Image 1 (cartoon, rainbow, N blue to C red):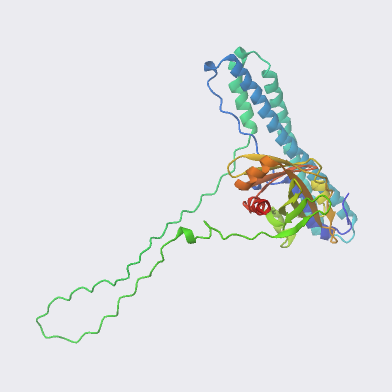
Image 2: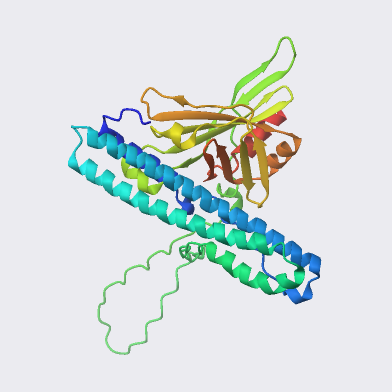
Length: 389
């Protein structure tokens, strides 16, 4: 199942890396979010049809919640299996240290507890879903009494959102350009005999602040970046143009708990570019993953797999992968590279030129993962370069 099982001390960080990846961290966007439940209105003011629709929508949302728990349980089981296999291989290795065995045994115990909790949550979600689906078939008169109780049952499934840190409040510093020194106060008249006094030191010069000019702020008005085409040719037979821009980093993600094991390497780095082949436009995404078990954890980028783009304005756009990619393994047997080519139709081209990206959801063969975009303007900028030429 795992490569190089005899090299237990060396593979220990890699397996812990895979385990933490499979478990995921909701705070970092690796687990799908729970759906937001509709606010339950006063049922006595609604017609029967709307009461029935509310019950059916609640059943649909409960099914989505149950799917979240199902995926968590799947990942918890896979994590426990991977760690158990690594522990068995380490115990069979005579060169393995006692510390490695102790750490792996503890990791297996933690994974078993996590799996048990995930399965219990899934069973609870199954029971609530069954109750809601059964109630959705009731007549409206019965639903008016049962819906509030059902809503409370569904709400208990959704964990409370994590607390957000309090942002620091920075006081803006006012600017002053008046550098005229204040006039010295007059000395009171003295009728007695004058006595020699020391000359007072000059008043310190006040600092001069340059006025803020929004037009010169590179954060508000960043300098334009050039277009770098790595392919710009025309087919001699069909006459179609083939153009592709240089890949740029779209985002990178590393679970904080994995940094001690990665020794300065990033876990996932995604580079993006746009290309044109005649009338076909593509968004090319290249994922470089530092994980010896990447193919088991991610599987592949399947053909017709979906990439869902979420923009800063809240809208979403679904793209389809043109071909499957099983991934390529580097010489070090740790780094794996996956490439997806997602088709851009006319509506996608129009939307992506004008909107900035916020997050992206990638459908892998083993499930989907959500990632936060770092270069939010990358796709819009590259499409502007591709379409203007």
